[in-house]
Image (cartoon, rainbow, N blue to C red):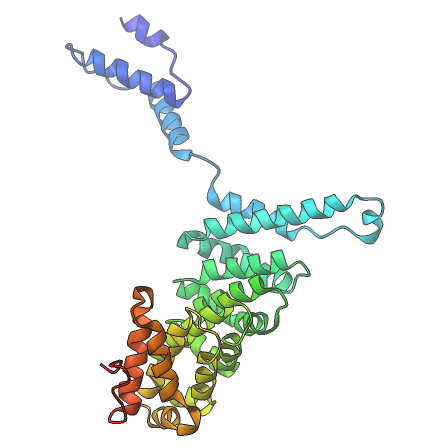
Length: 336
C-alpha cells in the first residue's frame, strides 16, 4: 500500500484534482492511518491550487494588451502606398474592439483605477477624443465615462487633466451625434455628486451647453441634456438664480413649444425646480408674454388618460398650481 502511494502519479489538471478528491472520499469510508503529507504532495497541491485559481488571463494584462493596440501609430504615407483600404479598416476595427473591451473591464472599479495608473485615460484625452474617426472618439468618451462613474479618485484625476472642457466641446459641436451623446454621458459622470466637477462645469458655461443640447436635432442629446439639467438643479438648488439669469425659463418654454417628445417631462421638471424658492424664476414663468399658462392647459389636455405620460402630466399640474393659483378656470374639468 505504501509502495502504491509512493508510485502514484499526481494529476496535472482540474479534472485530475476532482478525481483525486473522489478517490480520497471513497477511501475515507474505511479506517485510514493518518500520515504526514510528503513534501512532494505539498508542492503538487500548491501548484494545482494555483493553477485552478489563476483562471483566464489577468485583467490588468488584458488592459495592457488593449493599450498596446491603442498606442500603435498609424501607417506612414510610404507604408500606406500599395496597401489595401481594408488594412486601415482592420486597424480601426482592432482599436474599436480594444476600447470596447476596456469599457467592459472598467465597469469594475478596481480596473478603472488600474487603467488610470497605466496611463489609459491620458491616452484617451491626448489622442482619441480628437481622433478623425468618430467611432474612436465616441468610444474614448464612453471609456472615460465608465471609469469616472462613482469613482472620485478617477474623477479628480480627469478634472486635473482638463477633461471636462474637451468633453463639453464635443457635446456642443461634434458633427457626429453618437460622439455628442457619449461625451455628454462622460460630462454627467464628472459633475453629478462631484463638487469640483460642478465648479469646472460652471466655469466653462456648462449650463449653456445643456441649453443648446435641448435644442439639438438629436433626440438622445435633447433627452440627456434635459435630464442632466434637472438633476443638477435638484442636487444644487443654489444654482437656480444663475440659471434663471441666463434666460433658462424662456428657453425651456420655447423647447416645450416644439413637437411633443418624452424628454419634455424633464423640461417641465426643470421648470418646476426653477419656480420653487426662486422668486425670479416664478416671475419669469408668470409673465403673460410667455403664454405658459395656456401652453400647460393645452399640454394637460393632450396627456390626459395616457398612463405612460402620468409623470409629465403631474409636472404640468404642479407648475400650474405654483404659477397660476387663483387664475385657473374649470377648463373642461382639467384643473384638479
